[in-house]
Length: 313
Ligand code: BDR
Ligand code: CA
Image 1 (cartoon, protein in one colour):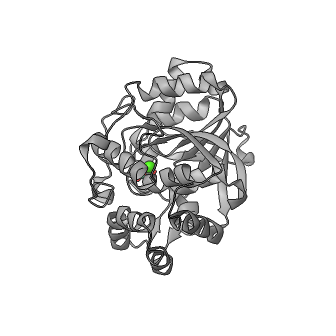
Image 2: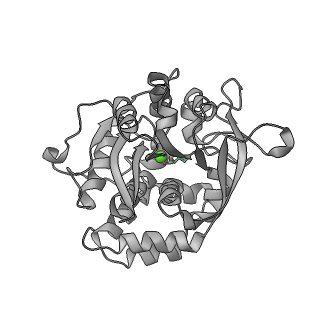
């Protein structure tokens, strides 16, 4: 099995990524760490706990609260895309228990306790990861592998023409993470997610027809984004975060991951958060692998198999 931590701004596909970590028997999810991003912080925490609850794992996986704003900038949300990120679901207040240890401390401690063993799936702005780096110089070597959802591979942004949301929200954090020397794999927004990890109506109908509590949860948490996507001309739900988790746990779903030098724009007027992904011709040494091709059908079937489960492994 793969021991991992998921660092998340939980809304919509972050919930699906948590399901991957919680339901796949190959995944050993040791903690969930929360970072400011998609929607209000308390709402994100509620969304993560709701997901633990529907997966039947509430109380089994610790949830640590992390940075509530980016390193140097004001928080920017994506509530216009995600609504509350859970499709209006709620749960009893007594289920809402979280750890007292800060997410950054938990990341540093757990990596130090298991040097070279733990991987991190980072599917929100990279603030917590950058803070962990600043706190403990050994963090980078203690982490086995870092899987990042963010940026675009010389493609379009989704919050500005140039930038993808996670890197836009905290570009300084993203820049420091790529400079740090992690073993990094990146799942970009465009073209990868937009071409290979979109579920159109036929796939969504198949998931709905599974008729399990997990499949209804999926349909519900994806509802606001689906509506938004249709308005902007994306024909279905997008799954960058669950794909990032799957890329770590089920590497056979990744058909091609290519070395690139990745850096993030922090100074540009129109290009804040732009991910510059340079290939060999620019003479820069690679610092990440960027996923370029996945087994798209295999990824869909993988999520279907998890959402079909009636009892939790
Ligand atoms: C990223 O931003 C969020 O809206 C998604 O969860 C994903 O992590 C895509 O730009
Ligand atoms: Ca996310």
